[in-house]
Image (cartoon, rainbow, N blue to C red; front, side, top):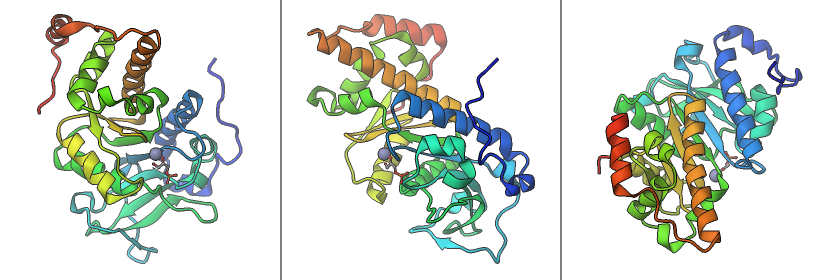
Length: 284
Ligand code: 13P
Ligand code: ZN
């Protein structure tokens, strides 16, 4: 039997009755939050998540709701609702008490302000400081009719370490090295990892640099000297993508620590994988 990783405390929110379909969605987000903590990729309040839950929560906030303006408008997200983790909140606490450390927020008909629909039930609650990046990603996913609905940011250790090494500060070099480490990387990330040059956390600059990498077709972005961000159809897929990318980074670092610059799988084997799995490669 699977262990119960969620203690009973805090699980029952009165508001839950209003949004019965949210329970299943939350269960997966909470499970992934636990994985992130166990992986060591969510120290303190590191990392955040957004998930388009419009289908699960149905309606939008009422006109009389308490609206908070956004720094800019996201017309393609008008009327949509997102589960978002809180700023300064721990992923491990979100897993335990999502209604206290996460929120479902709805954007209004112009997409330039939001109101709380569910959650945020703790003093001083604010949505993640990376909301500009999350909303920019979510808007792009909708505008391009991509299937992904989750944006997940975390601090995967080996990926961050790799982003400090001068040899991998070039996207093509980074991707060639990661693909070469084990076949799964090419299979799960056929378009590679997008390198996002350092920008101050929580800023529109970081959002715009991330958007540029997403537009190049990447599903995982490496935020230089900070962390990584993945999109996925659900939290589990976004987590898997981070996990595969970080595994490759970990293997690479182990080889380097052993004093070997690994040759990797090489072009012929990678081409064989592309052929065998019918992989949709990058478009840049
Ligand atoms: P938040 O706590 O505001 O989500 O910030 C955490 C983080 O990882 C910033 O990049
Ligand atoms: Zn971060």
